[in-house]
Length: 588
Ligand code: OXD
Ligand code: MN
Image (cartoon, rainbow, N blue to C red):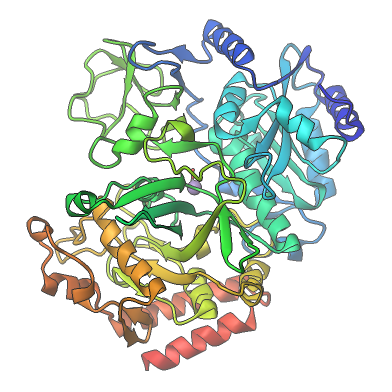
């Protein structure tokens, strides 16, 4: 498929190491995809679902021990430990190469090696970056065909350049003890072994588009962020774009695809999804920050997705979707998961592949079960989704799950204060996870497990970039998760979050006032429209409470931030230390 010498000699080397029986290039054609689907069905790797109800849809089950990203087995292997910093797992590159070579030796004997040339972003975009993933898994190939742009057009765009990210993936024995997800940012290389779970093996996603890309972005002067991108269309047709970074399990996909409440829909407001997980941002010729979604699909969490929480996501999965670790409904050869509806199937197979009795209290779908679906099938996909230039960003929104501390929304005073707010991001653990409830996990910019270099240098990059963006977006923080004394969420969330986003855009446009507080600019309660929320218990008084700031809680939070800065160590920028000091002074 190519004469590219760098590609061919690298392939030769890997073929010698892996020793596959066969090598197949993935060309991106539907014919090849269909043949691979058939082959994977014949071996049981995937199951063909009811093609009338779910055309082009398949089910896959991972191994029981292989259901999520493995942060403790994820490494950043830079020349020095200092470059990777104190937050990442580090290993000497030579030592890690040796370990991996031993694991990879002859790992594809009797198997086929697939060569997947893929692009993150439309290949015609100045943002685009090319990768080649080698894998022995058809499941990976089929997912990559959804999540990225794949095939001949990518290899043509690469031409004879050696500038591509190399990705190696071997399923091997799915052995947890020898599972490694390793990044060599200085070699443009990602190595994954002994896993078949998406986040560990679809190397374009977290590994490339966040870890390797954040390293490249630092070097080249742009951003690779764990952010959704959405557009809000006003009744006059104007569209304004927002990026938002929330830790996993805080509803990024739901916000990215939100449905406006009826009072807004009637007036003609619309929300358009550009991306639900990752944004690459660059300074445009107009001095604004422009964002693209480098992905081509959604790898979303299935449980809890339903016609109320996220109808757009649900409709996206009605065709050409791969479901992983959900319930197989044998009655009609479809799928089900907890929270889809109130009618669990009675004749069904659970995510482990066993007959499932929905009345025995066990979960049928794994809590981290997923759908891999094409962005173009999303009913609210933005017409700018594939635009090589991306979309101009008006506001960056940070957020997390905080029961008490953070108010519904506030605005940072300026760029550096906004970077402080991002660096101080945290989320509280829920009852759903093992361990104590309400434990604060610091997750700066929602990038804790995704920064491909030193966290302190990453923050410094944010500070530096602020000097290079003539018209920077304004930076905000939101918290949809404040609870009352009974532990119940106060704010209705979902579509009603639009009311908060409109206050944010009002601030950007300069059409709405705010009140200065120690943490930043707070809304005047009257400026957030709560019309129609009476039945949700939202009165002006309740809203005022949602916007209140408890200084004692924030003092405690500042201590947590300091502790984290100390952990990051002496690469923590002086600007953030002084932001923290100024914040403490304001609290006193
Ligand atoms: C994801 C995550 O899968 O953030 O997107 O964990
Ligand atoms: Mn994510």
